[in-house]
Length: 248
Image 1 (spheres, rainbow, N blue to C red):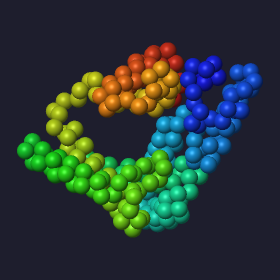
Image 2 (cartoon, one colour):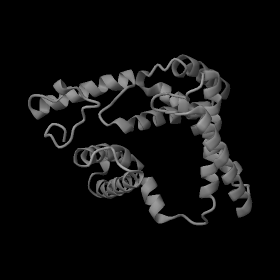
Image 3 (spheres, rainbow, N blue to C red):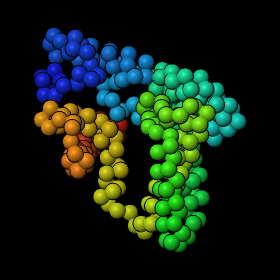
């Protein structure tokens, strides 16, 4: 799409990458992306860094079930070597940053299911929300992609980052437990995650070309909703006609 001028991807790709005939341009594009993955800074489709990090999380947690002490020691070492110094090689640091949430998710879900009564759940949801908003205002911007724990010094921002993440996870799990039955629309969107990750970037850049980025909150929300629904529609087509694209 960039090659034919349908949208500009200037933020991620140098101009000299997309030159010559389409096949040569694609080869240069592919090798440029492989280099970006090795450096942990970019790839053919930006949001898909999440899938690479998720793979490492799955791998590390599977190992931890067999060797928990060794796993913990290795995680601590990797955290201080990669995350504190923000070494982004192969997106491993992003995964190391995310592993505590991935790991705790297995245990939080079963523990929170023991809390009974809507009133108690609503109370804890509101309490979690207040705690999160207070910490966010204090700690500032965080980013798992940029390996940014907050605006404070690392001795404060790192524990606050993980504290807010755990509290936020508890809030989301409690909120979802209020629903007695699965919502088919929410489930369809959740099952379309891999296609949303893969397809949203071209759609977002098309929006940028025709409308621009400087939009109101309401317009941004509506456009984000439309992009998500289009991705869900594409996911259904992929499942039906080209399931190999998403690994089925």
